[in-house]
Length: 82
Image (cartoon, rainbow, N blue to C red):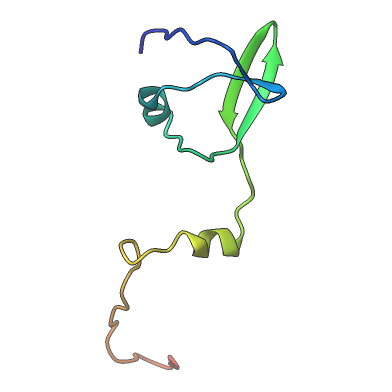
């Protein structure tokens, strides 16, 4: 992807840069995503924050579209207990 120019704008008491939709899609980011911001050698780097997964955060992502249905494994074999 070619470089895209952006302008730093005032947002309340802070400054902000708008990220174009195309860049968000290519970076696989969505609104509300947490980012880590680093300044190294005069460059600003944005990376997705590696947040620890919890059971609650994983369960919150379950939707009717991505929920798997129960599968039958057949009758028990050997000393399996169900």
